[in-house]
Length: 131
Length: 141
Image (cartoon, rainbow over all chains, first blue to last red; front, side):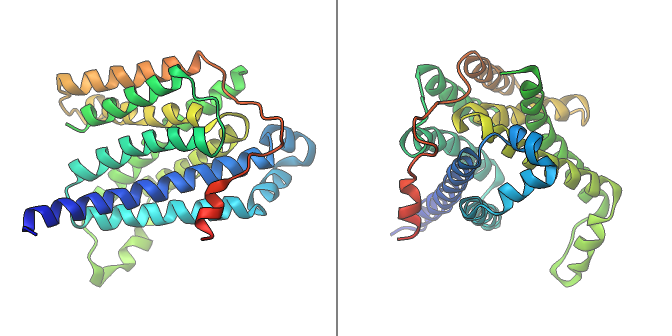
């Protein structure tokens, strides 16, 4: 395998690890917050401490935060090997698409045409902003 | 969606890019940090710009969690992505950087995306209290 192909594959693997970990983190945190319920209502019933306790005692939330941490350190690792102008827009725009797909598949969200179009616009918009 | 909830989403949108920008200003004033002087990072946390940035990012995370407790992830996503637009506008009007035509088009597209999503429903009602999360089974192997 040529060094160029090796570099392309390495960049793709690093970006993929950022995107996969961020998506798992977002989905788990969103699912945890759905499981916990409306924080405004919990705060009204049990106060701010009650709302904080409801969040920090949820296992799914912590697994989500751990996945987000993996994504963050993957980003730092990728930035030490590849250009910011490649890693940042590629990971940000791909994460929007994978989160939309994961929201549909795992969270059973109603992802209608409007939300697909929004995900596409954000994806293209992030790429254009990074140019 | 109530006015208060739109305010929470607005805070989600503004706090992250503003926090990142404050961290950037603070770290630029601290200067490059080498591995030999890693303690500089801990001192940097106590500088006003970096401390203010951290406070804003904590506020971002709290408001992001609040938003996810009453809105879908796919509804909140464009709001967080709008942070890229705020960063570009801060770069243009605060840091006096030039913004090319393609960046203005990017800003327009992300703004349009936020417009599309906020015109629709914010939350998907499920009959069961919480969705079955197949992804957890994958994580646990």
